Length: 88
Image (cartoon, rainbow, N blue to C red; front, side, top):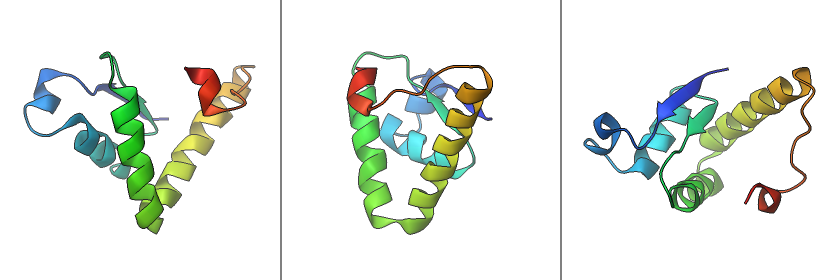
C-alpha cells in the first residue's frame, strides 16, 4: 500500500495541477491519494475518471489501487462504503 503525501503540497502544485499530479502519482504506483485542500476531491476525481474512460492501462491501474485499498480495509475490519456518494 503506497499512500501519497498531500497532493496540495507546495512542491506538488508548483510543478503541475493537482489533477495532473494525481494521475502521475497513481501511474507511478500510489494506491491512495491524500487530498487535504477544500474542493480538491471533485476536480481530481473527475480528471481520474475521464482518463480512465479513455486509457485502458490507467483504468487497470485504478482498479488495482482500489483493490489494494479495499483489501487493507477488510484486513482492519473496516467496511467499504456502498457508494461514492456515501463518502461525501
